[in-house]
Image (cartoon, rainbow, N blue to C red; front, side, top):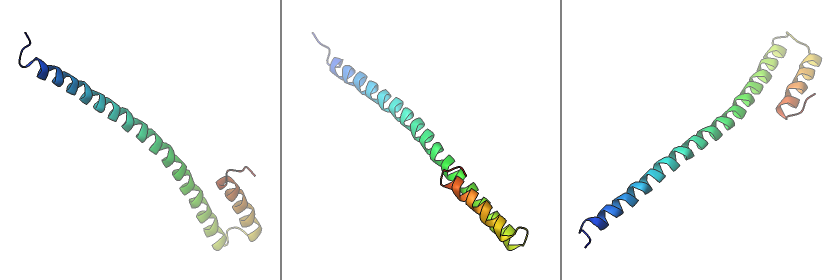
Length: 87
């Protein structure tokens, strides 16, 4: 004869198994999300460095430290790096 609580015990075990699955799956999902977010952050970080280089170049030109020919040459090099091309 089956105990009155036997069905409830089985349901609790299924529920605990399901909860563990959700916790582990959520943890794996969180790790994957963090890795992917880190990769996109690297791309934006390098983009910010390139923008900073262009700003510094403009400032040097504006301050008279370099002439127009040198400014244009260096700007083209930086723009080619930004577009993913090597000069």
